[in-house]
Every structure is written in C-alpha cells, then in structure tokens.
Length: 203
Image: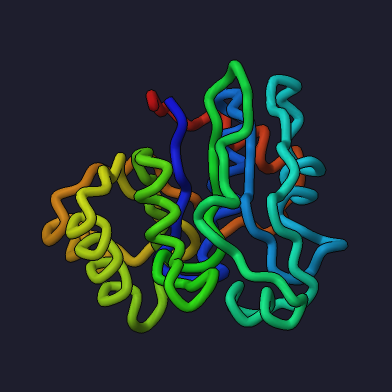
C-alpha cells in the first residue's frame, strides 16, 4: 500500500518516520518538493540512513533553493507549482511519500499540501511530536484531513514522550498508534536499522 507521511508541523519527525518505514518494510521513498538545504535534503538523509536495499529513492519533482514555505521558495526560483506537475513515480513496490511541512503549507496561492494529498488519494500516516501547542496542531490536522475525506492510517508519536498529551490526542481522535519514535541521542543508519527491527507494523 502506498502511503503519505505527513506531520502536524515542520521539523516534526516525518523524515525519521519515513526512514524507519523504508528500513522496516522496504518501501520506496519520494519527497515531491524539497525547499532548501539541498546538500542535506531529506532524500539524502534516507539514502544515508536506510540500508534496506529494497528501498529506492525517487528524485524530487521540485528542488527549491531556499529553506522557506514552498510557495515563497518557488516564487524566488521563478517557478509556479501546479497540481498537474505531480504524477506518482512508477514502481512495483509500495511507496512512502513525505510531504513538505504541515498539511496546510502552500505550494502556490491556490494549491496546498492537503490538496496534493487529496489528489493522490492515499492514506496518511500522521506524525505528531510533543511541544507546547502540539495537541492543538494535531487535532486541527486530523480535522482538516477528515473534512477532505482523506483516510488516516494512524498516528506516529516522535520525540519526547508525554503521556498526558498522548492520551488526550488518542481520546479525541480515536486513531491507532502505529509506533512511537523515541528521542534518539544519535541518528544514523545503525540507529534506524536497530529501531526498525522493533517496529511491528502492517500497512
């Protein structure tokens, strides 16, 4: 099953979640839009830290030069990103698609991440993290996806575990937890591989 890995905010742990899924299940990886940090892109993180040889990393559709909201970064590069620009890569294996930023992050004035998710018509794994405001961001993200009739496969909690926050989110969303990613002291291929062995997930 192809899946979309989305987050409640930017820098939330989507790429680490993607790496774990690609390592554990041999998924291919695709990040359609990379905004900035091209020398240390999320695709390069997957290439460096996923050792499962079944994982193929598909090239980004857009590689924008500055680390900013994709719509602004695209303007600076003289690009207009349109829905018609995106076609799923051809592959015989399941594909993990990582979004750029939160689901309401824009690609252009009238084209948001959530619109691309709806266009692909694939279920979402939603990555949440604990910080002041994360309950609000998680519930708003879940509601936005459901309003668009986008299926949510489940939640992945990433980083520091706060049980009260987690319990509140689960109570109000009634979504399953697929797995939880601890706050790793070091993130490298060994860390990803060892943790992936502990993950039991059927997508």
